[in-house]
Amino acid sequence: MAAKYIIGSVAASFAVAYVADKLGTTPNTVSNKEWWEETDKKFQAWPRTAGPPVVMNPISRQNFIVKSGSE
Image: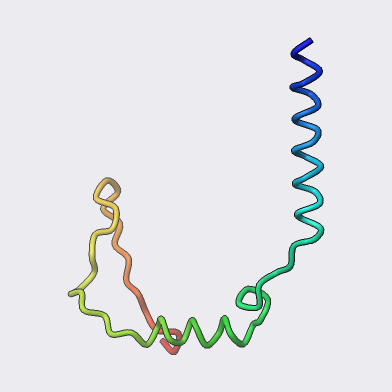
C-alpha cells in the first residue's frame, strides 16, 4: 500500500521538475558572452595582495599562481 504512494510521489516530483526545467530561462549573465568577458577582466584586474606562490593544498604541496590573461 505504501509503495503506490511512494511511486506516485516520485513520479509527481519528476513531472514538476520537468515542467520547471521547460519553463525556466537562462539568466542573461550566463548566456551573454560579452558580460562574461568583462566580468573576467574585472576579476583579473583586482590587485593581488598575496606574496609569491601560496600553498593551496598542503597535502600535495602543489602551488598555484594566478596570472593575467595577457601573459
